[in-house]
Image 1 (cartoon, one colour):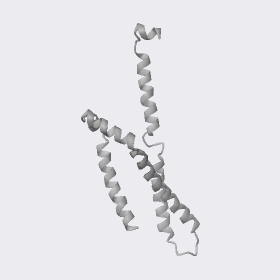
Image 2 (cartoon, helix red, strand yellow):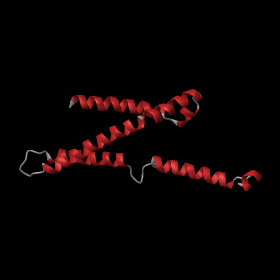
Image 3 (cartoon, rainbow, N blue to C red):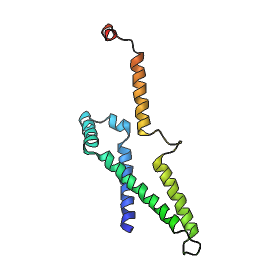
Image 4 (spheres, one colour):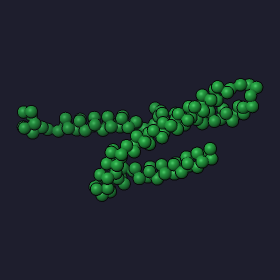
Length: 135
């Protein structure tokens, strides 16, 4: 299990590095060929799906802990109830964060929907040329 903790620490550090690289201004100011390479890698190789899968596994692991804690909840057992309660509180918070909450930023789909809606509104509000009106 120590290897798991080390792995999670390493992945967390890598995700922080990724977070810095995913700054839109930084991406927008990069070379267009680099932009295309990044987008092609993300879309063609399925990296996002792999990342989502890893996060889903983390979520399943946390749910399994909750299920196990509930199944082993006995007053006579050698369970440290204060520690278990603290862990369950932390895990619940982690699952809430992974799931998203009303206070969190919009989801990817919500963000895309809003962006497309704005673009459609902008397009609809532009005057149409005579060729477009005939179509």
